[in-house]
Amino acid sequence: MPRFGMVIDTRKCVGCQDCVVACQVENDVPLGYCRDWITTEVRGTFPQLSMEIRTERCNHCDNPPCVSCCPTGASHVEDFGKTVQVTANKCIGCKACIAACPYDARFVHPQGYVDKCTFCLHRVKDGKDPACVSVCPTHCMHFGDLDDPKSAVNGLLRTRKFHTLLPEAGTRPRIFYLT
Ligand code: SF4
Ligand code: SF4
Ligand code: SF4
Image (cartoon, rainbow, N blue to C red; front, top):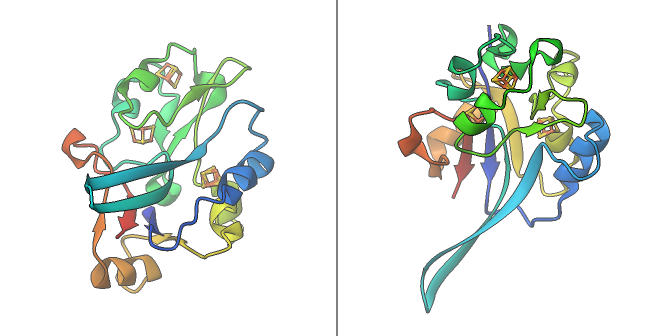
């Protein structure tokens, strides 16, 4: 069984927000909410400054606190792809998972359940890339099986420098940012 993850090249991301719009359309995300977003981070001190533009979403962590704190089992690790998912009709809207996620990746859907990025499993099951990955005009996003040594994502991780978000949180995120 695969273990899905993403590798995103921050050197190619131009912050166009196409991924955000594609996600909203594909997943019927209500206006005013989002499953993915763009972050701009400036590093260093003047005049030695650098800027990273990142597309962010749920990291589908290997050690997800949102799952361990969920009292109903609504937040769970799906067998297919070992991704973190929410079963809407099991969610009681207690927001424990929202408090537990260090990435602010979840929101309460107007219909009362907690929602977030699904890694577009409905598309991946059909052999397609997630919507955000498929529309990126600079092809900066790569989706694949982290457990397959021959996958493109693993090839990139072997040959490029990368970082993850808040590694100190101990969540073991599965989105990797190439630098
Ligand atoms: Fe859970 Fe947040 Fe990790 Fe996603 S990013 S798996 S919501 S802790
Ligand atoms: Fe679980 Fe829903 Fe509570 Fe989150 S809000 S912890 S998914 S029951
Ligand atoms: Fe949205 Fe799918 Fe991309 Fe997740 S993988 S941010 S649900 S388009």
